Length: 136
Image (cartoon, rainbow, N blue to C red; front, side, top):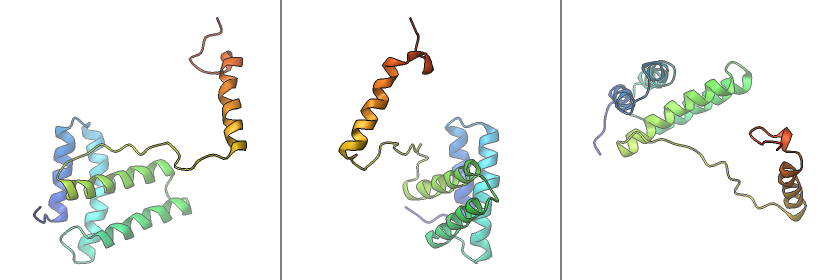
């Protein structure tokens, strides 16, 4: 794949988002809040093409802003999603939907396996407490 300037890469991502059916508001937020600051950081360091060292530094800065309370977790996630879209598009040429797995990679020991089974069994005992479950 040929190298594309980061400013052009950001524009291509927004065009792909528009073609994929994203709303103009979502595209504008992604571009102005997540992509433009990354482009500006590259420009400030005199780099025209996507540099993963700068991306890592940018991601760390987002994380530190979240930890310090400057931005909340939701805003941090949106910023990181923009960075992920840009880097994936650079690597693959495609705008891919990402949905990280919520399944744990760790095996529960017997005690916690028992607690989990008791917890899920309680869904049948107290149906009125769970949304979407009827009592009849």
